[in-house]
Image 1 (cartoon, helix red, strand yellow):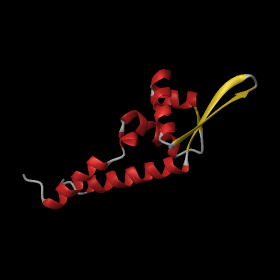
Image 2 (cartoon, one colour):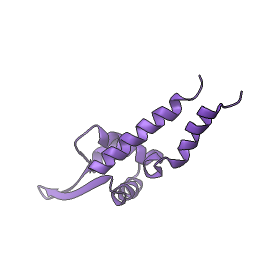
Image 3 (cartoon, rainbow, N blue to C red):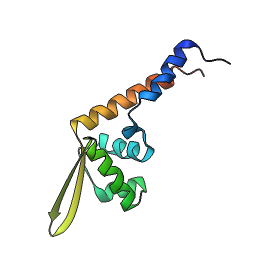
Image 4 (spheres, rainbow, N blue to C red):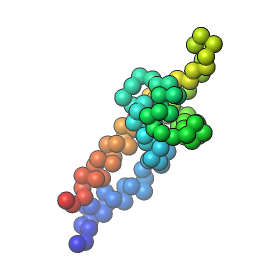
Length: 109
């Protein structure tokens, strides 16, 4: 079964997908942060099942892209890291999901 021209054009759009968002661990992090106002590091650590180092590395990439805000503070002398999506991060996640739905929706079956 051959791919028609419309399907091929839609599939070609995968080349332009935001690779910062597309990476599975970062997509998972963004998905959790998209539905909450903010979350702490330990919450994301438990939800994602990533290691501390891996989660930190992905958060740094998301922060460098301007998608995540990382706020470190002390609560009763205990360090706490709060994470939230920036306006740009929320937009990037929304655009990514919209684009993926459109691309996947063009596939047969």
